[in-house]
Length: 264
Image 1 (cartoon, rainbow, N blue to C red):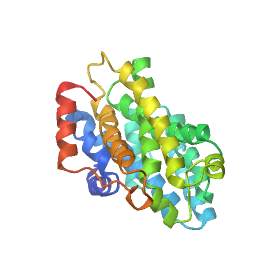
Image 2 (image 1 turned 135 degrees about the horizontal axis):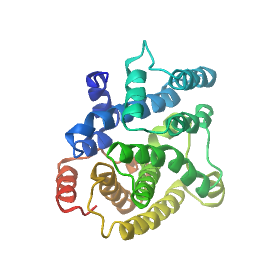
Image 3 (image 1 turned 30 degrees about the vertical axis):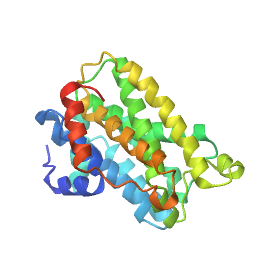
């Protein structure tokens, strides 16, 4: 399979949290996880860095065409690597293409109408990504796959909160429109999103009560998500403090502890 070396630094810098979690995966699966995360980062960059919607849509369509062409792509190492891990781990190509489809609406500064719509988008992006990551880790039990999807969805909800200042600077908002129309200020809206994330975390914790941690490289996102969420709640969702710093030394120690004891 194509070497993932060109994308290690990109994932480390552009998606450091997932990069750190991937380091706890078996060595045989680590590179393949990084290919998947590099692909996800590429899709995100198309949405956020290509300012002209039509150009962004054309770029997403290019990815659809390349990956659905029926053979190993040539001329783009990342596309070839994504196709390679799909074949190696028998990842449904429809699920990979669905990651592209889920980004389509974001090319035109989409804002969810409701909290349920926001959660659905999180499930279709980060949730689906976590399912694919779990399959790379040879997780095939339906219940564990479901947990992986829920962990990814929670990670997305936390991410929408963490990224609020960044999105605002770009003229975007992922905060539900109906809540923004009712609540008096954005911290109150963010608090409602956080409450939903906390509810989902309770459900995940119950499901993980007897899990041996085979899927720890994905489940560790929950460990970081809990810590980031607690910081934002304790900070009162002040707009200038909503952007939580990336994982620090204490977070790394918590990842190590969670990995060893399988307590996420």
